Image (cartoon, rainbow, N blue to C red; front, side):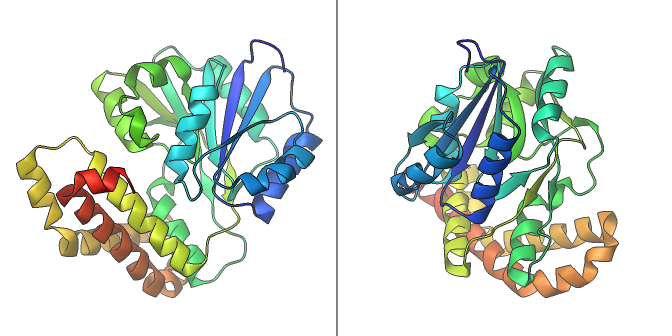
Length: 296
């Protein structure tokens, strides 16, 4: 890698998987350019040997064991040296043209653009649990066309480092893209969606781990939102309503954007209820006990 990389890719890994192996093999097979920096951030130091074997040029960081993905991203962003910083996760495998497309969109992006994101494709094979996690996390992006966007998925995004330095305020809580996007919009900065910037969700965690992770994400999200004490109290007691709202939102998105997935949605619905309840309980506790939520 040169002393001045043009692009940093931060790959957050909370556990090793075949998806991670496929990503690292693809990275090595495509012969990463000398002007790219790959930063792999691990929640389990025991996975370091695997990364060194498959991607010997990667920079490896180790976060706390069982750290959340936003915590790992935060460590990786701090180590990024390039003017553009891309984010992804170990459970997603990038499309064969992903790195080339990253280079294209970052080289041609107008100065007004602070970040770009792309679609996350569904698991090729999977049952109700896999589809439930996919739809819960990514259904918001099923119908987003290329062009200006309100939100982009943090699991497949690239940001100007200068914008991260300016608008990523609460670094002690890790990197949460929704909060950054709020800051960017208030500052008049632009987000864009690019349909050619594709990754695929390949692996999902076991049920208990997935539910626990949704709970912890909701807990941290509620704890770190900038709300008054009165609004926190109101939000904290809205958990039952939030469950219904989130489930209805996923159903509406599938019905509108991908009606051919209705059978997948029906298969996923029992699992969706479990994961949405876990998130909602976590978010509620985060609103009511923010100090505990920040330590989650």
